[in-house]
Length: 457
Image (cartoon, rainbow, N blue to C red):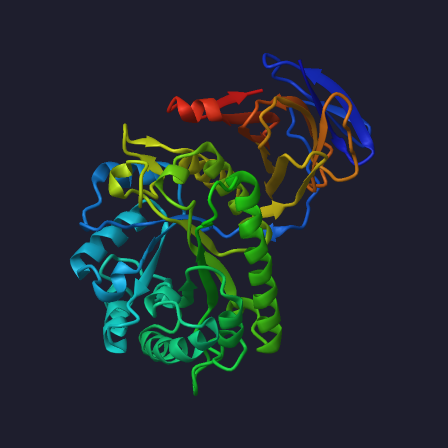
């Protein structure tokens, strides 16, 4: 038996139901109504970007198979970046780009197109014209990047000198691109990590690329984008790996807030931020359960701090062989989705509307949620190697740790749920239409190449 609590504010009625019981009771002003949707109190939250959950299209051979494209579409990803160091010196042909963009748009995702920092500004402008004026794919591309990982491209110079190198090529290409289509959004410079001193120079500092193009009402750059692959050996990705990302995410959010105030950028002109690439260190670490839970935590932080996109690296590469540069979210042994894929899928398909912060009485367990109309979604990530009982309340006022840990979501709802989560597991709970739907994914599922299991409670 699971205990579900429905009600409004102080009018709370306890009602025990089982999986076979299809009725519930809602108390509204003292009147009991059967078979009605639970009343949810409207709550404020942080809007979740509709293109948040993303990946990168990458292939040395420029040949991404239909199977990879189809599996990527099935994951529900909302954006796909076409970028990488290889495209600085060797951009794919327009024919290949058109095929990829058409496929991305057909799956309902938003393409993010990188132009070269080496090729001319005219060539960058020509690509914008091809997609946004000539409408080669039938729909314009809104989001663009200029260059990729310039610190590595320039052979790791002193980071204090990066702004001087980046400002000229970035401004020249951005001005040329926006002369063709001033409505596009350009994010950059896509550093290999959050290089703080260089970003301070480039955004509001001496090499400012966040200001307006002279004589125009639009800006050179519309968002800070950066990459991250934690490089420490034997790092616990679900703990230390996630904290590594959290540190940079908090710094990035504080930076864009400060620059928006400094440059009076508001509304549609406000500076945003995104993660252009992220993953574990390399193939052996990528194909792990912990990396999947790190992905879930990263996307939770991206929702909390208002990222525009977080595009992992990558769909499929190096044959998915679990070695070297295999950063795939599909395993090559049997073309099965990995733990990273499944965590991205659970968030892409269940979380929308406004992000709602969560809190847990046990640090091993992460909880966060979203509210979209009468739908509340909650993710519970158990990083501990032990089964954990919990009491989940969809408000911050009710804290219940009897018989388990206390989990709270700041949704201003009197709904609650009592249950347990397996060791090394991630659950998603969706409260909607008087029902609770649970999707459970465990390390055992991952090791046995099994999908998550969805159950109506």
